[in-house]
Amino acid sequence: MSVCILTTGAPRRIGFISTRFHGTDGVTLEAGKWAQILEGMGHSCFWMGGLLDTPAATSYHAPLAFFNHPEVAEVQKRLFGVTTRSRDTTNRIHAIKEQLKDEIYRYIEKFRIEVLIPQNILAIPMHVPLGLAVTEVLAETGLPTIAHHHDFTWERERFIVSAVNDCLRAAFPGALPGIEHVVINSMAQKELARRCSLSSVVIPNILDFETPPPGIDDYNADLRREIGLRDEDWFILQPTRVVARKGIEHAIELVRRLNDPRAKLILSHPAGDEGSAYLQMLRDRIEDAKIDVRFIDDRVNEERGVNAQGKKVYTLFDVYPHADLVTYPSHYEGFGNAFLEAIYFGKPVVVNTYAVYARDIDPLGFKTIEMSQLVTRDIVEQTRRVLEDKALRAEWAQTNYQLGVKYFSYSVARRKLAARLANLFGEGV
Image (tube, rainbow, N blue to C red; front, side, top):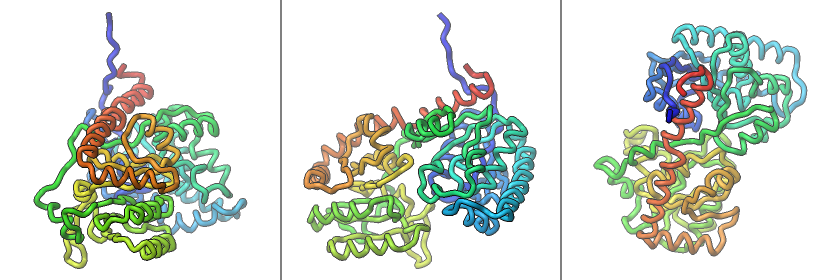
């Protein structure tokens, strides 16, 4: 009996393209993971964006591709919240689009790109001219493409009222042949089919569960002491940016109701670019609750080192091993990287049952403390029990890690990416 085996196919030169591949935003992180997997399969990966910290030898820097480029930002601010646009705005969109098309063609030629992977730029209209440029290049070249969609227009309130519905229909995403559409959750898959009549495959966000997580070492062993915690304190970590959709007020309420001097809430990230009103509201809640909350964003960065005050700086992966509990009370997430990180490090999680979690993650059997917009007495007691019972935490950690390996490991993405390439080239099966 013959056996059908999925292989990686012939080595390909694969070009990632987005507004930026820089820092620790979700798109940049997931693109890096895909590249690592594809290179492990024998392919070569290259990068084009407006803001890059990728290797210079394999990168093409096109400043106009960045969504915060002054020319782009000036045009973008005229496109949403209104229903019509001026002729001058239309002309500016197309002028920028044409410049970007030239850049994309040069990128393809320089690195002899055989497969293009647009990262989110055909999904969310943060940069309308770039989405149009990529779509037109694909229409003109027929270049095999895997379009990786993280967030769609209809998922963000600020894009609902628009003066560029013609552009959105054409390119976000466009209906072209030769494109394998990839989304990160089943809700997006269903909406893409319903709204655009486009089929897609779900490749969830992933972590390298095949490689054990880093632990406490000589560098990070002093982290608790450095942020003022004792060994007996409960290190309750909120590992997200301080923005309203993260629901951090629920974490504050949980710590208040634990009513235990050992309970310390640690916020690892800054407020980001969504204003200061939410942060001020949280500070008011903290003052009213009279709980111990530590903001350590000045001590956490992408790399180890020292900050401007000469104090030691840690990575987020230095922080996780010290945590006793992770709070993740988000109202909305496209997927949930912080959830994966928590189970990767074997930490119990208090999670709000946001829609994607409820549909795609909860049914898989993870052991968590689940809340539904309310910090109830039962949630508080479950949390207390987990914090006081090391054996229970160990049991949950083992179960959750095995589920992570099964559903959200690199092997999952490797198998599905191999299938996408096989579909594009008719090989490897």
